[in-house]
Image (tube, rainbow, N blue to C red; front, side):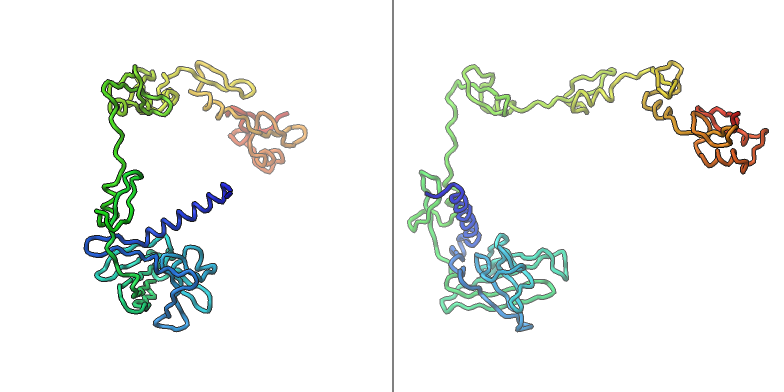
Length: 362
């Protein structure tokens, strides 16, 4: 028995193959038949075309699958690579970029590769593989090699590129479209549009509905407040409370600018008459005549800094609660290298709180 991990890996591979297969299928459009290019995929070797300008360069490509040639540049998912001396130089296409479109008699597979063309970094590398229906032997040729535009165009002539008329029918049990020559739908798209599961039947008359506050979904309940599912669905939505400021108070308001009562309160708080002053030991205290309107402003101004004054006995600068913040200025006064005029401001040093005191202290 396969392990759960092995099953998961196999499932992911199957899904990836199925998804890629669908990229290589072009449904009938009334003018062109159904074409499945997966038949052109090669498992053991690449298609190879030689550069038109230099035979030392080749382009390896595969159809509906990554290249068999792989290296550090031409890695996983690469479908078109430029190769020289067994080393890839650029990638012109990746598997997950495949797009199919009709251009006259050609079914064109467009792909993008490396994101920046070195000669025009706004554009990626681009390849176009043009498939042409033929009932002769399969052939491959290089049509366009625009080096400075990072553009390649390759022609593939093959009987496998010929469209066929396919019909589909709808599997009514599984609501899936199945290919069937006797089916009434000429395209998969037309079949899919008419093969969807029917909507669930409406509830019986008189059914009432309630709203779940956990996930805001409606459910049928005999005493529910809603008479119809539409009414319940319209009103069973989460309520987002908002607030606005009214008379210096936060009030509920569905159109209010604040998402929470806390956000509102931060703006809507009534003005305060409190004042603050810097007290002893540089501690801020409430003071009706204080110069600061907030405690934060007081604390910012009240921070004590290291000041220096000149000790008259030792003639040395000493740290204290008054003096000047610049120790060099203090030392200049102490040593007499700065002129001190007792009749001028130079004879004083600034005391804490801004008061002037003598520069020296006996």
